[in-house]
Amino acid sequence: MPPTGSLIPVDAPFSAAQESWLAGFIAGIAAAGRRASAAGDGPAATIDVLFGTQTGNAEFVADELAAGTRARGLGARTAALDAVTPEQLATMSHVLVVVSTYGEGELPDNAGLFWEALQSDTAPRLEGTRYAVLGLGDRGYDDFCQAAKLIDTRLEQLGAGRLHERVDCDVDFEEPAAAWTGAVLDRLVAETGASGTSGTTGASTPAATPARVRSPWNKRTPYPSRLTVNRLLSSPRSAKEIRHYEFDLGDSGITYEAGDALAVVPLNDDALVGTLLDHLGASGDAETAQLLRTEREIRTPSKELIADLVERAPSSELAAVVAHGDRSDLDSWLWGRDVLDLLQDAGSAAPDLAELLPLLRPLQARQYSIASSPLAHGDRIHLTIASVRYGTGQRTYEGVASTYLADRIGEDTSVGIYVQPNASFGVPADDDAPMIMIGPGTGIAPFRGFLHERAARGAAGRNWLFFGDQHRDTDFVYEDELTDLRQRGVLTELDLAFSRDQAEKIYVQTRMRERSRELYGWLEEGAHVYVCGDASRMAKDVETALLGVIGEQRGRGDDDAAEYLADLRRAKRYVRDVY
Image (tube, rainbow, N blue to C red; front, side):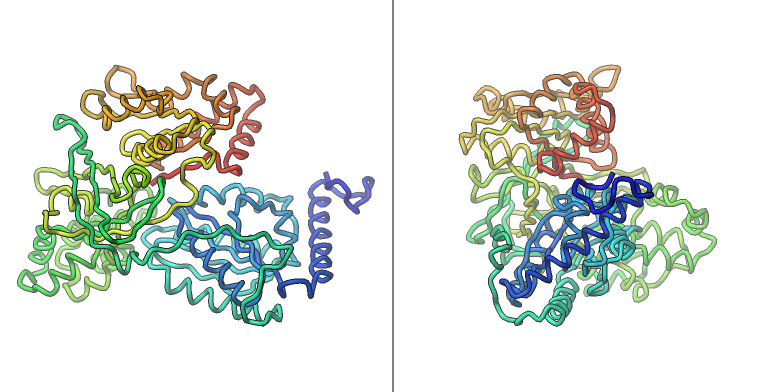
């Protein structure tokens, strides 16, 4: 049905879809008229900067972009994509979108609802809107910057005019993002007639929320921290090795918030570097050894290396798998294999050292959810990390950063770190709001920080934690702390799920379903829901369970449950930190 107040007569001979299209088209014309009539009031134009982010990078770029527009005499508003409806989008004159791609080509959590509405057949036409899109991603994935590509294409399909070509940024996004920002701002000044000098946001433009100050310590200049604590949390009898780390912030001036992530700059294992150089016949090359140790990714093969080896060795096992054209088969074959494995598979056709180096990706920092609160541990940052170790009789494999921290940091060795803010994942601002935390395994990390934060604040809000792992007697990390928090009344509810302590496996989602009525009651009382951990299975299973709880308790069907959960997302009461 057309919206209330539509200019389309109720008896017009149009289908519902045609009426929705026309309603959106008319809304766009009306919006253009409103923009024209407002010319001369305040800034030359108000620019809407929309972002979709999973870890905070896109939001940071969006904040800088908004600041740049104001410096050019333009008004600026920033908002998460999910906070904007297509109908609102149709009223905007200039829209700049900064969006990251999460997982295998997926939209970030705070952009999924926007995308669903935008691709609907009833989305309004956008002829009155000019736009530009910046994508953040990782070329190591097949669907590089897929979210940005989808939004860019859809806006064009809906009639919006492209202000500037889309740019897709790899993990080192700062320089291309800055270049794109400069070009877009120049285009905006030219189109809107802005002064190009600082101006106010105008009376009609909401004041922007002050952004957190960017730390001088970043991926280019990490802070050399001292690792003061390296403690085994899991039992030596556990199938896992989970460790607690504490990093001294010294006089760095680093600040953080519960819910942020810490990036750790690792070094490759000397033994693996040596083995790789031996295979390449370059074991005496000290300069290259240092390069491979500090600057190149030698655990995870790059797409460029895979393509090169398939071309060089068409009869190799890798080439045969690629020839099948099944992405899941390739992923399965690559799982656990590193660069050395692929070179051995290629045999004599493999590249030499000089040919190999350009095919290796830069060694990247690894990000981990911070497990502490600055109110309780302002001079340190805590992490909870599972050491990755696996292998066969022929070779053993180790995680780059996890075993670097576990095995190779001495008392006199510094570790490069920097904070990665995550504005969308944090303790509720309202100390009275209930909080539900779902974090099995190392997913408990941020929730330890959340609980310490609430304890330090003296927050009255109730707190409920769902935690689990394989066995209670070997894998119940932070048991003493959680017991103490329960006794003190900080942790109101604690539901545990140790999957292998009984014949039938029990997971956190099992416990959620068992307590369906109470869980829904907390939601109705304004609870915020947080999920942290594995994205590929756990997070999806938890969301399915949550939808089941809502649907069972409301009794209004699947669509109603999905809309209820969507409302929680829009209100930022259902957020995830998944990897």
